[in-house]
Length: 116
Image (cartoon, rainbow, N blue to C red; front, side, top):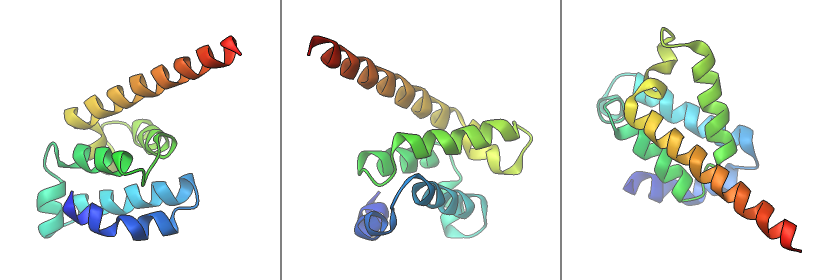
């Protein structure tokens, strides 16, 4: 978390949209699936879930980018080598929570629009 907070300013400056945000997720995913110290930490449950959650909480990556990344991994299926982190239960729990939260925000917004 501290490392992501340290790089937060840089991430904000390079993120112009969903594609750049997805590139950050892909880069961290590649690190987690590689070898070395970063992989040892990020590849273990529930580390990647916390990476996604921190990126979202710090507004570095929005829901759209996370959902697009998740859809890519879902399409690859459980046998795909890059889907390992996606299929971890903590990641699935976070994605489910994010979807519910996003749905609640959408319905709250539509209620406000209806009352105008």
